Amino acid sequence: MNSCSTKGYLNYLQFFYCTLGTLPKLGYVILVVWLILLFYLLGNTAAEYFCPCAEGLSKVMNLSPAIAGTTLLPLGNGANDVFSSIISFTRSSNSGTVGLNSVLGGAFFISCFVVGVISILLCMTTSQIGVTIDKSSFIRDVLFIIFTLSCLVGVIVVGRVSLWIAICFSCIYVVYICVVCAMHFLVSKKDATRNVNLHGKEDDDGGFDCDVEVPLLGCIDEENCSSHVKQTIQMNSPPIGAASSSCCKFLHHFLSIVELPLYLPRRLTIPVVNEERWSKPMAVISATLAPILAAFVLSLTGEVIDCSNANLVIVMTSVFVGLILGNVAYFSTKNSSPPKKCLLIWLLGGFVMSTTWTYILAQELVSLLVSFGYILGINPSILGLTVLAWGNSTGDLISNVALALNGGKDGVQMALSACYAGPLFNTLIGLGVSLVLASWWEYPTSFVLPKDPFLFETLGFLILGLLWALVVLPKRNMQPDYSLGVGLLAIYFCFLFLRFAKGF
Image 1 (cartoon, one colour):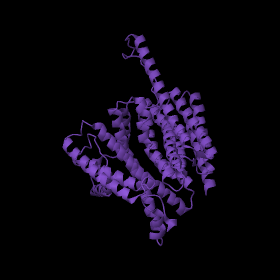
Image 2 (cartoon, rainbow, N blue to C red):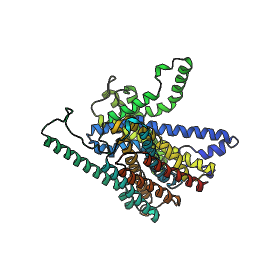
Image 3 (cartoon, rainbow, N blue to C red):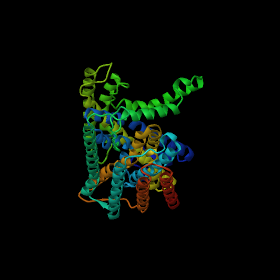
Image 4 (cartoon, helix red, strand yellow):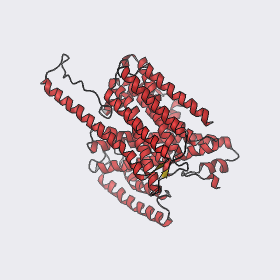
């Protein structure tokens, strides 16, 4: 039975070999469907709960666009990769192999494949031909990624990571934030000086000549960007009212019923304070159940709690706290609108609970992929490099392509910025925090990295793709074109061919 043990909440190897040992085909079908559902739940949790809380915190805390764009927004977009990496390093039996490859695979997919696809599609879109991106911001992001990957190569060569080395690696992102803020401040100051020198004179079009370069991160109106994405979705989706046939109505109701078990557990435990989604009964229930779920997850984390008596105390305390919070929520909120007072507390609660759900789902996803590796005889690193990386990055592909094609110049700027700022965040925070936690468990000794000879191959091709973009874009006057896109896609598919050829 030990051979049928995994570190997820569900034991997939026992389910496949022991429960459905005589029905392997049914086992494959069930596990594949569950894999798809986990990917959906991860993405949906980030989109419906995590990102709105991050956006709300940014507004309540009055964070500048530059700060929000380099902290909360990348965290929302990269939550899947970050938590998958953390789970792989701290809760999985593969000692970080899946997490390390998933982060690098996601960074490679976004910076090569997604940028390549966007570049080619821009050349095929008449309205977007000749669009340029900000040179200084692009070079800054690419150089930071290359420097980060170079540091990671050094860490992998050594093979061991101490707590202080892991902390220093994560702190590179703090340096990056400082550089972004400094550049944003200098551009804003230059713009203010230019406006003063103009003495209020208008240009020939009747407007002020304020042609300021749009910074790569967070300095574009988020509402405009979201509206472009919504327009794209609406153009590509039939109206709800168009489903007039009884068959379509039946299918709609059927899907709603099927989705209910996936929707209710999160809705009942994550506080939501959006105007359009506000519900006082749901708010009271979520305030009551949120501490209980958090305590349940904590009690199942063996590395934190080992004593059953301690687990009982934690659960009973959480029930008591939940009842208090539920009563406070009931008497302090209105049926008509979300709370205006103590909004920060509600947003923090939603942020923490959406993080908790992401942690739960990421742990199951990593555990399932590792189980698939054992069942199919595939190296888990390949699954992390492909299936997990592609699954976590599909949302980036869809949203960035839609934004680039329908968002005008600002849309192209923001889409390509996300293709470099996102992987940088996932690498420094996803891997960085994972290494900090893993080395913390091993302190005062060092954490031993998993030995994967193909990591150097992945890093080499990833850096090659970044260097290709760094050379080609400036030569093309910062205009994404066929040469950039075809080159990046060629590098990515060449890497996949070599990796699969050696992995099977």
